[in-house]
Amino acid sequence: MEKKQFQAESKRLLEMMINSIYTHREIFLRELISNASDAIDKIYYIALTDDSLSFDKDSYYIKVVPDKENRTLKIVDTGIGMSKEELETNLGTIAKSGSLAFKKENELKDGHDIIGQFGVGFYSAFMVADVVTVISRALGSETAYKWESTGTDGYTLEPCDKDAVGTEIILKIKENSEEENYDEYLEEYRLKAVIKKYSDFIRYPIKMDVSGRRPKEGSENEFEDYIEEQTINSMVPIWRKNKSELTSEDYENFYTEKHYGFDKPIKHIHISVDGTVRYNAILFIPEKIPFDYYSKEYEKGLELYSNGVLIMSKCADLLPDYFSFVKGMVDSEDLSLNISREMLQHDRQLKLIAKNINKKIKSELQSLLKNEREKYEEFYNSFGRQLKYGVYSDFGTHKEELQDLLMFYSSEEKKLVTLDEYVSRMPEDQKYIYYASGESNERIEKLPQAELVAEKGYEILYFTDEIDEFAIRMLMSYKDKEFKSVSSGDLGIEEENQDDEGSQDSDNKDLFDYMKNILIGKVKDVRESKRLRTHPVCFATDGEVTIEMEKILKSMPNNQNIQAEKVLEINPNHEVFQSLKDAYEKDKGKLDLYTNLLYNQALLIEGLPINDPVEFTNGICKIMV
Image 1 (cartoon, rainbow, N blue to C red):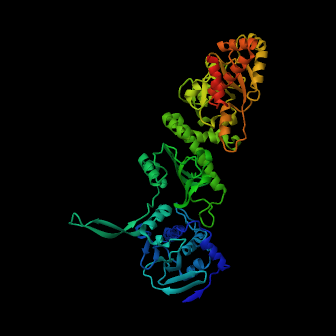
Image 2 (cartoon, helix red, strand yellow; image 1 turned 60 degrees about the vertical axis):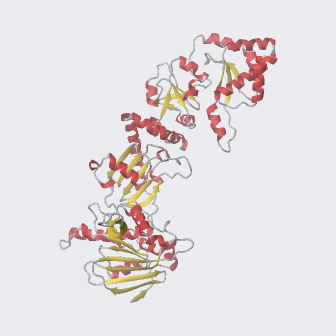
Image 3 (cartoon, one colour; image 1 turned 90 degrees about the vertical axis):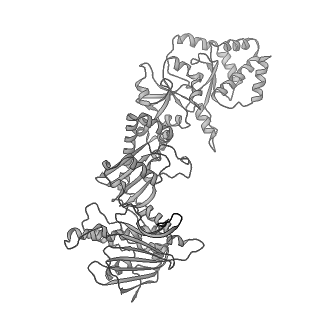
């Protein structure tokens, strides 16, 4: 037996490998299984050029063997094995990757690739084991060797007996501590779960002896325990199968098995790219919004695999925020991984995959909108708000990309319509895309401010989401048509007899100035309305902030008390207007009362709180008597 020290620089380096690189201890099993898969791959590549060596896939496997009594966990493979020199080189030198060297020396084709790159995955075993023993016999050798280490104090290397080519890694599992439960890595259910999570799509069978209970043969009420060898992993991932072989049910089953959601997806997207960057992806557009979607707990991202091995459960970099509802996975052989494989280097390949995925999602949504309108509306009712946030966020960077996916309820169609559909129906004399904001479609339909626009026969879009107006302000226009609120001070509608109306407005200037002084600090102006037809009063707004925006901004924490510039508009053709004129000439006190009542009435129409409800009700009583 030879006792040797690691060739790495220091004890501290190995301690870092064991304690700092990996986020979760369970990763050790993924790393050791990936190494075992590499070892079988190497035989496969040699068999391609060596006629004396046949590769019967059924003869190659990985087996996981827990032993609770002796507190050991064994990972066995029938791969290429390692000679004494390879054990010393690959395991005696930290960060020396035999797989990477093999990859460089051989031109790898046929869709297979070596997983290991950095040679540190093996040392993750020390996160859960006090002693790691490796028994290996190399292909073409009659002698096996045993490598053993307790960690930082080095390793021993000696000849041993092993009947077949391949490698056994035996972990002496640590005793439990207050911080960690190491027993779980000897439990059958836990090992199966870790294998399914990270290594389900390793291309070779991962076997394990699994216990169960079944009815005893020849007896109705008696049961017997049994143990049988089972293959734990699926091996062939759905994304590597031909699309023609798969049915909608296959995709739905995959969606359920991966716990992407409890609903059924509205649409699946299967991508296979073999270009500058090779990758496969299966994406799903969910039917229903997750309960925690707008909470801090929700994590966006796609599962990321490298050669079928799960690298990240949530790779946020693959999805923009506005498509964060998309579920699914991406598998690529071309990603540059960091030393622990848990994090990605932000390189060109990753950005290119993300860009392509983004384009594909948008394309599929547009196709859904065009060809399956009901399904798209179902999707939009769940996730349309997120698309609007996408238009608003990042200073409108993505508005051109998302504008054709937006929909709003239409006053004319009585259903959701796109901006393109709205513009296509605009009369020649219509200058703007008109919209009205409110808490619901029912309330918007009753808004006094919409009377003139509706009278002209112009379609109105209803904004009921708090983000709607903010997104539209960022969008500014669509196909050279600007957006205009029905509450805007200038509706851009030419009216008949405009000169006469202007003269009438001038005749009542003193009345409006008097009312404005009564409401000083509450409104910017009081003026005659050109938009009202049947209602006596309403608010219009000057400036960028509308009343609905004001309500939303005030509801936010740490609001800065931003207010809309309100204008109280009076309908000169309503009976109330004559009462105002009479009061101005005969009883200023009554005009004060009328003015405040009309102001509070306008507040109620907008759903704004009345400053003094008692004063308001007393004012109504005064009028009644």
